Length: 457
Image (cartoon, rainbow, N blue to C red; front, side, top):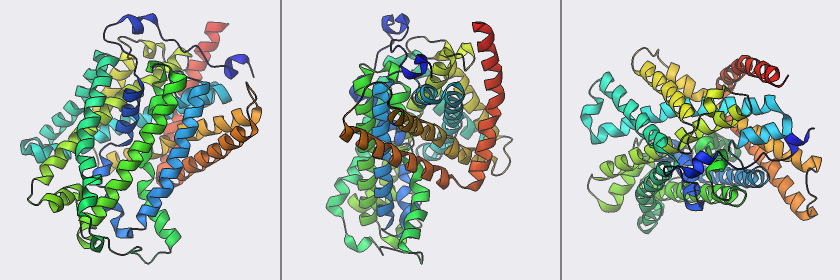
């Protein structure tokens, strides 16, 4: 392989990013908030009820998944030390396997981002209607609310990385306050009698863990957030890995303690049919019915924070690919530290999908698109972990201590296995349709690759 695939590209970004008063590189706290905010979106507010039918054995599934997510985070941390630049999985896949693998990672990640943004916005409307019932009175009012939820974070992004970081910190603090209230405070009101059976189905223990895991598998999507924006992080070789590990661990604590507390606060027979488990938990702790308002506020803030972070990430990967000639050059446009064209195009696509959902959408089409992203999201993980295995086996760059090499190898294999489990959990239909979406990008790659070849001829 050529040296350009072995060595990291320069880590510096254009001078404009450093000179603009609206651009600011993320420190460790903001990078950590980016990871935590993107991992924890709105799904946490339904997770306890989703897995309650399996019994408390679902906590075992959560534990196994947490171990896999931590392994993936550690691998991303090591990869960020080797290639501390914007693009994350795209950069690692391209460095190890060349342009085509890098393009597939970028293309699949981009599809995941804008479709998921539309889904997050639609889900946020459900919580908004609790606070503002008029927003749910008509389809057009719901559509406008969903569009506003998408464009407000986009405007924060277009204002510059300084504002992206500020919004992310504020959203993370505001949404974690009620979550931690239940996750930690709920332990003081914990009643073991509410837990219900350890295994509530007729399945074997292994079958119950697998079934619960299939629901929980995608709770940790977003662990790569800091690596994708590595070019905007101060001292990325040091801080990106730390932010990835700290953010994933923080999200894991909230997930595990939050689910355990809800299990102990809400009776099992009520929890399995609950549509708002955290609301029920807050009401059980303090009485009254004001828990719904608190949880609805937390959910809206949580989703706005996730959209703020995912909007930035959705533009960073095309930006990195455009710099290498694998995406249209227009995506390389960057102002105030933000790839502005990538932000606008991504939000426009997500907005179009949102309008389609509320106006012309056939039954189940929108949901099918969202399920497809559960597969496309895992493609960059597989390619990135495979890249780490390649780097270790090929002995690139420096020789390392045998113990560290063995540790990194075990982590890479575990992370690859976790990524494969994510693919399996997507389901046959999502994998089949996701592959079609993935290879639809081959035509784009062919055009961009030909253009790149002509430019260098």
